[in-house]
Figure 1: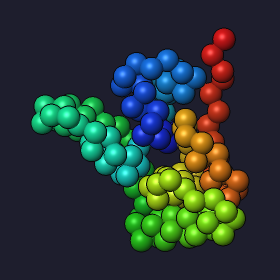
Figure 2 (figure 1 turned 120 degrees about the horizontal axis):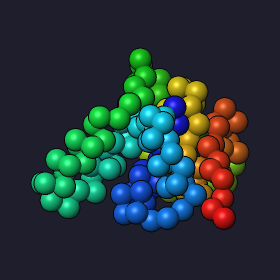
Figure 3 (figure 1 turned 90 degrees about the horizontal axis):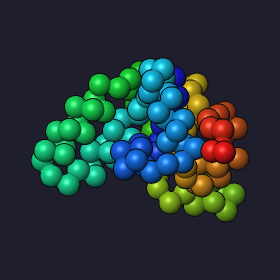
Length: 137
């Protein structure tokens, strides 16, 4: 399984060609793409109409969801990661990114992303594995 960040899903929905969206297509074909609850939330937040919300709920609700046995533990790890990043001069643009990292680490799955904040967070959290798609030719 590979946890896929919101930005990659959005680009995939908009059919934006990139190494990440190509990799996501292959992951979907293999049944290896998954979500975290916060990513599901972010995707639903983008709905522009009630019909679009229903479509997003149906499409993404069917994907594997990484749920921790103790959400407090995941959120604590996310808060600690945010603090550790700030101590090193890095302020993540979204605390949700720390929650996504904490979820990936907790479930020991790589993260597919297109957001520079995750590269910085990977330097702070060595247990995070980033999924690196091959570059487009």
